[in-house]
Image (tube, rainbow, N blue to C red; front, top):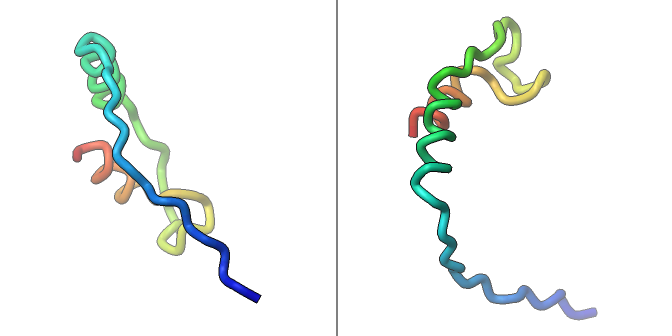
Length: 57
């Protein structure tokens, strides 16, 4: 049995208007994450600290 062939991934340029990106940044900055007690093991989803780092990026 042979391994399945992976298809080559190639970057695909996209265009997103600056107004859309500005709106997204505004919405992300205004987001208030829920309390995240007891979620260090990701059992309830993405931990708030990790998500906060991702949003800040």
